[in-house]
Length: 301
Image (cartoon, rainbow, N blue to C red):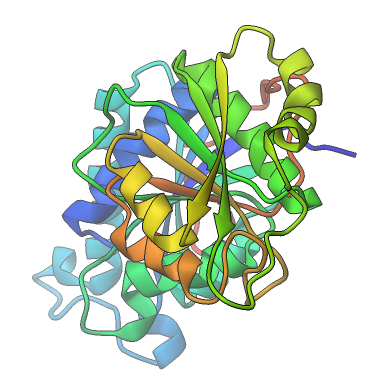
């Protein structure tokens, strides 16, 4: 059974990179006509750090108040990017990775910046992005590069079930963005490497057939090339507006993503990268009709 994406979730830490993620997440929510949830993980309480005002006459100096200000700034950025999107902000106690994984149900698209403020490992959004991409129950979109371009969506596939899920996500993104989709299989020529389940161009075309029927308006270009997956994907990212990859398991990536390839793309892609390991829609997106409150109390998303 597949699940439609019914909300977009974005994690923030106050960095410019996380604001870029907010803008991208707002654009995704607008394209999909779903609400946007902005989350800031408030780690200080779990570390038993005092978070109240510094002094009674300085009530606005507490760390929790500063966190609320970060959410307000992110909300304003989202509304400026996509005024029509319903936006909710959420201040939740806990470490960033744990909070985001708990919030990211299968019907969610999780959006993160590629790096953050630094200083504390639990708050470095780059580290969070890598762990979320490996463990989240939903697709994870990591915002990299200077921003959207006029290039195509590129999806890397190997013929497995996970790459089929990535194909579904990539077709949906191409349809939403009205751009060409390049379905790419890299036949690894390294000694001892298996080429996976895709053996030739016809096999790749057959793998695309079902999604082509679901998205007849998407122009898709299948390609089978030989080379190193990591090098080929990085090269393709320079002309793409989005790279889509399938993930296997919880902490490891197989198939097209051999060894360190997945992390290499997350760190070195010239464009945003989506890692997909959750169930996805087969007939477009569904609209979430319930209202989202403008702000939740801490610990209650």
